[in-house]
Image 1: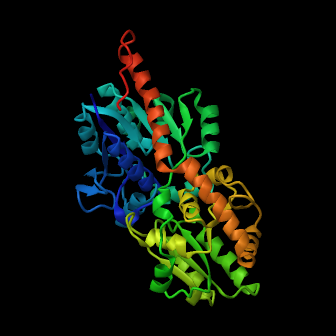
Image 2: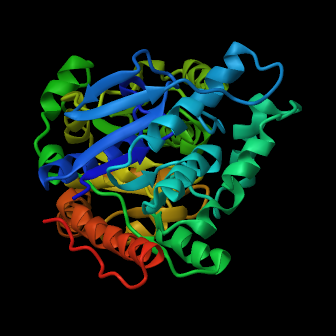
Image 3: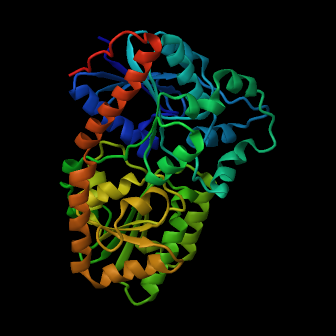
Length: 426
């Protein structure tokens, strides 16, 4: 029986870890524990080694390129960090060698997703694709920001995209997985088929419920008595850390001066990160705003940071899901978030968190939580229960297995209409 599950993200490096990497890693771990053989095949984007073992999961990387004339090193780096529409012939050849694969699961769209779909079609294997970053609900300004590195440059790779069918990728997939309910609804309206499922991201509830907040505060010089607002996300305009800094300044100016802000995450937009540092420096409260680089997925500082905070803030301009909210919930922390994308459906406003719908809501909600620790604990308890019952990775893995079975059944019918559907692996 074929047991290898091939996961293909755009990049996969510890130094630039994000929500997509967390999802792939955690799902792969559960698949491995269930007797499957997950393998991650990706590009060399931001990586140093072509082969690596991350958390017990083999990672295989291949050289890649962007099909634009006159691309500078800094522009290539920007594409590696976010949104680059890459091509990799080596990756395609590697996928074609996976004749014993159970299925191919793409975690990227465009030409890379098309590459995975083409390999799956040639080998007669199921092709599953996850929409992690959003397709149908991405704000226009975010799309423009991702296209800045290649603005005005001739793209000579379009024939490859056409050959791979990258534009019709979602229409042809055996299964399309959407992390957000809104994205799934939009996909059903736009794609014209029923092979679409809402599969939310998950969380390791046990890991994030056991952090050492005292250790984190001591390490970074944060007094135990100070009210700590935390944000963990890529330093990126999408995540809107600038908006959170402004809300924190309002919180401080309102007389709630025993407060601090911690921003943790890798920089994916250099210009935005520069503007963020400049605003912190000009605020006069630089000693109360902590800006830290991203943390490795296995770092003990990650659960420690959640445990250390009094409130977790997600002021995102766009958020297909919001896995960090689940991590904060698992630590029993109150969550304040923008009412956008997946966050609007994830959080029950007033019960498991607070949603921001108007410009002044973020500062107001932070102030309410500052003033009422009991209310913060109540929100945190409700969030923790929600995470445990609905979003633990064990629950998400079981749902994914059932969905994989539908993709396998479809391929079985296509490949041999009269043959019985293969028994599921146990």
